[in-house]
Length: 423
Ligand SMILES: [Fe+2]
Ligand SMILES: [Fe+2]
Image (cartoon, rainbow, N blue to C red; front, side, top):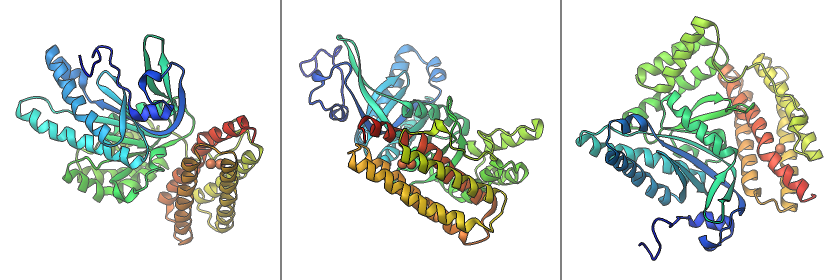
């Protein structure tokens, strides 16, 4: 017995989850309770668990899992997160609140595993390694089950993408990978050691998604090497995505020389070789595809749809000019966009306020971050020289892709709310 409860039946429900569901006591939670919340989801996997457990007796496997969960769970709790569920050797952690805390937690987990490994190696045991995929967005926290057993769990696309990114950590040999939705909500960007990794299309999706690595949990020599190679690495990725494979390859070779076992550089070098062999460039989307608004982008609100249509058109014109290195009329497009973005964001924000949209703060913070990124890129474009492929690529991922992702995720959620609220 434990705290007057039979351990076999005791079900841990986090206070945060209860708060989100508007309940004071776990006993009051009923199947069917559901509430939406902005959360960062971390899918935390113990790499190579199957191989590790094959070497162990059942007792050894249990000890391994307990070491693993005993290491990560207190850290998740200390960073204001909670474990939604354990799935075999993986934990699904939920962080309601600042995204920075969630990323700090995952870095702390990678460091703690490193620490744990010192003891394991001394005992002759194989070292452990975490693979973590993160994503942020509006999720539904729901009580699911039957009258005899109810579990509270997070549901939604945000969760599925986090799981997908965890699987992708292996491709790039990284410990922590997160989406642009998490990146865009980080407050202290400069406080993290990050690098852009790729532009992917998650399974079942059409819109490209930027993914980043947080490498603050790496050992110092690796962190330093990744920091030093950043300019080469960033430039090489831009070359690669624009199909300039030769230029990309020479820079990735330099990156791999700076850090010989850098999985991300090796992955791109593999793709460069594949291209030479097959003529096929492995990347998520063609670069000469420009956004076109169609009814499938409708958020169900006339004014918002009209604005989006105009934004799509202007962004496509801008992107075409940049890709064609035709900078003669770029000033007028940029000027139009800068003004129109303000008008559009203000319109959405007024609607959110007047209709008491519960995710106003999160949605507005996304607008605000975009406005800053846009202004920075415009300054770079206007400074002349135009930065070639590197700036073109950044406009592509930070402006075009952002617009597509925002108008297909955040804005439809707002649109549905407005039509339900008859606003
Ligand atoms: Fe919008
Ligand atoms: Fe918006």
